[in-house]
Structure formats: C-alpha cells, structure tokens
Length: 81
Image (cartoon, rainbow, N blue to C red; front, top):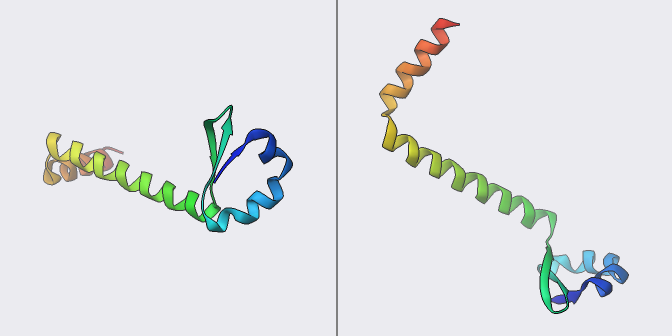
C-alpha cells in the first residue's frame, strides 16, 4: 500500500492498525520516502541484519586467523589481565 505523507499524517491511527496486513509505503510527490512496518517485522529485520553481520565477521576472521590462533590470542590477553 502506498500513501502520501499528508494522508499518512491524517490517518496514522488507522494505518498503524493496518500494519498486520503488511508494510505501508509513504510517498512524497509519488516518490517513496519511508515505510511503516509492524514491530514484529522490524525485529525480524534487526535479527536478519545481526545474523548477516555475524556471518560477515566470521568470514573475515576465517581469512585472517584460525580458531586456534584466536583462542591463543584471547587466552594470552585474559592471562595478561
């Protein structure tokens, strides 16, 4: 569903109730400027983003150091404290 900013402003309460049906695009002069999503969808997106970041980090670490090297380095750091 697409809706203009002016309409969104005037119908915000009703739009929030409609989020169960799916995201609502907010437009200005026909161009999308924002999207309303449900809290559940937002949390799902945050979890996916965190998972992708974790995968990217794991990939980067695999290219630079082995698990054994990371273990030794972290153990040495803890012992130094």
